[in-house]
Image (tube, rainbow, N blue to C red; front, side):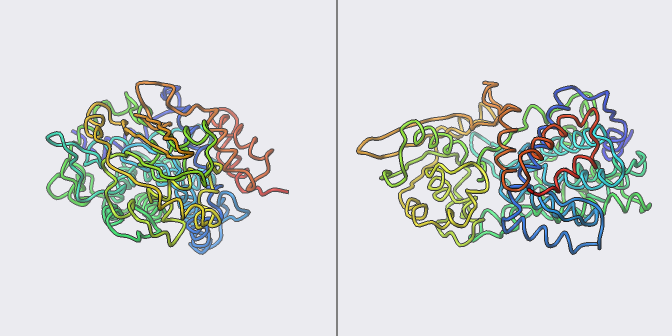
Length: 473
């Protein structure tokens, strides 16, 4: 029998555009467009700026685009910069095991741009990368695992397993054979970054590189793909050996490899759990922010009128990174519960404004933080047990001598029993235009939308990436 690595390599090299369901093709286009917009919005953000500067330093000159800038860099440098840009504002797309796209898309874009890859080639590679990452997410520990009716949060966690999908995408666009890609994938496992997320959650102030640094994973995936291509031998037994293999590397207590291989190439699971973020803030607060937005917009409540904000939120948030009231860096505002609710009450446009230092450190926002109180929602465990996307939220705003209340079970953008809870393509296009404003001209933004939607027809990767480097006239 083939090993898991060999099955993943065969899946990757054997996937043809004609075999992809229409829903998968459409989802990949949505992911690409959303990610370009997230990158645009982050060109002035500290994490984005550092990514750009480092990407321009790495591996000499080249002809791969750094999105939202006039700069071109080496394939590795551009991929590093674009990974950091996509993830900088924390408003990129999410699917198990969590953030995936900032790790698997940048290498594919850079290699595809410089290797005459078609739009269909890119769609195949990105689809495989997300499906593979989703399957790994299902095979290992998850942040919101349950045991005996209680949360069973893993002691070690992170997004390092996305290196397999990232490496597969690069290898596919390099046109590696199944045997070569099997070596590349197993090498990826050997050089996979550490699972550092729990330190990030438990230490405050948290590191500004975040939970799993995009540039580090992208660089490792690029190295793995090239080491296989240059004919290093890998270790195709790596995923089959639960005692000495990759499961040990990443510290997972649960290892269910059948979740990786069952119906591989026949069913596509990532589409059913793919979600998109409206707010440039950690996903844990999106349900309460939906509630708060409903209250302040429906009743036209100004920040200075607010006497208090009380919220019930999911049970996973009792960690220093989310509890912090000490906002030293714009990054801290992406995770602080109190700051997120305070800035949400100011009704800023959704996007880079939430991370603009003028707003992050404004006396109005910092003052309102002191009026925010939260508790864990008493029905959180029950709701999560009934549906994986459930995040019961309740917000009470006291203003004008009245109490205004809103409740939600599922944050907007999440899969739920109500299909209308998902963000439509039209809503994602609107989000993209908000993020692109001031970075590229409106006509260029429109051209990017059309190019992404035309990836399966006339547009190739180089044409798309050429548009992302334009700047306003």
